Structures are given as structure tokens and as C-alpha cells.
Image 1 (cartoon, rainbow, N blue to C red):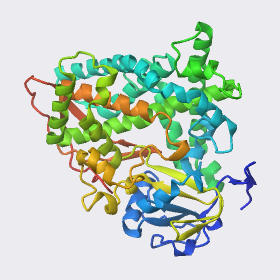
Image 2: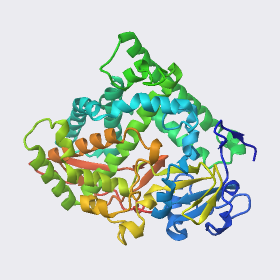
Image 3: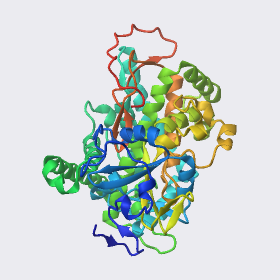
Image 4: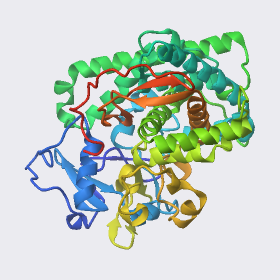
Length: 499
């Protein structure tokens, strides 16, 4: 396969595993491999991640799959993942669905190749925007957005109606990152339908995933209409972001938020600034990545809280004890919700909303002293399987148990067994923002509501590069009020939690 090389000498573009794994033949693969087509028997283009989890269960901590002649190596064993975390030998690999997002996000923080200078420039310019001082400044805006959510849920509770949990968490997290980071209000809670930004974003994420299931030569034929829709979605995202930036430039400086940093801050050493094009790409990156994964994490956590009354009661008691009658908890009070944070961490363990990350060898090496890799060879780490490794999490790894994250349990585990935000220098820059926001919101909802699950619902997971519960509805009930009659269950044909 013809390839170009980057200025670091590493090959650029897709590299099939046989090019970089000399011992590939020793790595197991699924049965029923078909000539030319590969391992497509029983596969679904809608749930490729969950397909891979099924194979991981049977094939072990490292395995490979073939799709239309291209080989992919997957890893999830804790020892392998710990070795891949060695930054002297491995780095982030931009591949699969992430590379498919480059037409919209370009060299933004999430999609930049390691050799591209704008990654380091943007990282150094924007990192202070996630300092403790900056986070404390975002806190009042997070509270204000959360109040819009509770007003919406209060109306549903008063009318005995369920709430669309993923939809409402998407509105919440989009408004939070838009207002704290860019001084923009999408008006999500005043809309009956999702904001066009969300519709276009879901379209681009879905298209990026679909590209992985279609042979590249056939893409123009099989995805012609989808490609046109994707181009329109990208153009729409660009127009929305360009307007946000235009308004800021016309109105002058904001409150020192992320957009101010993008527009005004020079690199502390080189004096270089982000270009107008890169500002657009960074804004899109933060708006998408800053709300899509957090909304999924909140949705999964609320699902488990509705299904585990003992866990919910314990978390609610902590909120009552720590926050008391304080109408608006302060920034410092959020970090004191240690059990609520464990609930969030355990939800991220079972269903990390960014469910995989890729690592590539920066030099010829041997993975875990067993699997030789040439420079540029890469592997995809399956985070949900890493988080279920029985050697670390025990025989009941599927069971939801927040006490896995008490301090003693955390200290007793290997250091690379829990990776919901990726690893190394390219790990999620906004992870503290997301964790503070999610812990705050869970605390506010637990203090205000009892959460009742829909009878018969079984967790289904939808994939669009990120993971989200599908069809999750809850009945919020204001604490201290009488319970309305529950509607009849419409469940019964749902898929199990793990396919």
C-alpha cells in the first residue's frame, strides 16, 4: 500500500496491521473469515464496538479483525495497556473514526496528528483555561445552566411525565460548554427539537463511523447521499461557529473564557497565535467533545442510579450531608461529594463514552515483551474491556459497584487499569471540566428528585463514535411528594446490557 511520510518519518494514513506486526499470525482472530470480505459474519455496521467486545470475550486480551482485507489489532489486557502507556515508545494514533472527523475538526486538539504544530500551540495556549482558578470561574455558569434543566424536569414531574435523559443531558452539556467556553447561548431548553448544531454534529459523528464499515473504493458509490449530507452538516457546523466567533470579535473581549484565549493569547515562548481557521477547528472540537461525552456519562450514571436504589440513597444522603440547605453549592463543595464521584467513575468504567483510543509505536519495539511492532504500527485499545479485565476487576466485573473507587481500592489497582479519558500527553484536556460538571449535576438532581426507571427497560447502547444509552426515559419525582401512578411498561424486547 502506497503511503506518504510525515516530517517525523512516521508513515501517514491508514496502515493495515500486517505492515507493522511481524508476528500478526500469532494473534487470534474470529472464526468464519471470508476471502476478500474478512470477519463480517455476524457483524453489525451499527454496533461495531459492541461486536468487538463480544470477540474480546472469547479471543482474549489481544486479537485482530479483518474488514475488507484490512487488518486491525485490538488490545485490552491491563498489562498490554500499561505498556502502551509508555510515552517513550508509544504515542496517540489518529485513525479509524477519529481521522474521519478531520474534514470538520482538522488539526484541532482531538484530531491533530502528532507532527502537526498546531496541537502543541493550542494545548499550551488553552491549558490554563482548565486550571483550578478557571474552573472556579466556570462554576456559577454551570449552576445557571443546571437550573434550566431542573426547571424543565420540575414541569415534567408536576405533569407526571417522563424525561428523555440523553436528550436533556445533551442540552445541558451543550449549553454548559457553549456558555462557559464561548459566551454563547443555544437556547436548547426553549426548543422542541434539538438545536441544528446537535443535529449536524450527530450527522458527522454517524457518518465518520459508517466510513469504517465500507471499503474505501466503494465509498463514493455506497455513501453518495450520505456524503452529501455530511458535507452539508460540516458546512452548517462551520457557519454556526463562524457566527459565534464573529459576534465575539464584534463585541469585544468576553470574560477571559476559552474563546478569548483562542483569539488573544500568544504562546508564552514563541509568541505564535492560533490562525482564524484553527480557531474555528478548536471551537468545533470543544463544542463537540466538550458536551457529547459528558452527556453520555451523565446518562449512564442516571440509568444506574435509577436501577440501584441503595446506591441512590447513599449518594443522596451524602449530598444532603455535605451541601445541607445551601441553595447554590459552591465550587469547593462539589469535590466533597466523594461517593457521587464514585458513582460517576463506576458508570465510566462500565460504559466509557469515548470507548477506545489508538496508540502507535514511535520506534521498533516489542509490546509486553511478546508482540513485535515496527515503527508506525498501531493498535486500538478497547476501554470497556480494559475496565472489565477480570484480573483487575474480579469475576463480577459486570456488576455496578461504586465502592470499586474508594481510595483504598484505587490504590490497590494497577495504575493503567482505568482510562476513560485516554492516556499520556494527548489525554482529554477537559477531563477536570467534565468531571466537575457531571458531579455537580448529579448532586443537584439527587438532592431534588427521586428517579424512577421505566418498567421493563433494559439498557441498550447506541454508537456514533461515542456511546449513549438508547431510549432511556426516567420519571423524576420531587422529593417529599406523592407518587403518581406509573404507566404500563412498554419494554420487554430490549437488548441485554452486554451484547
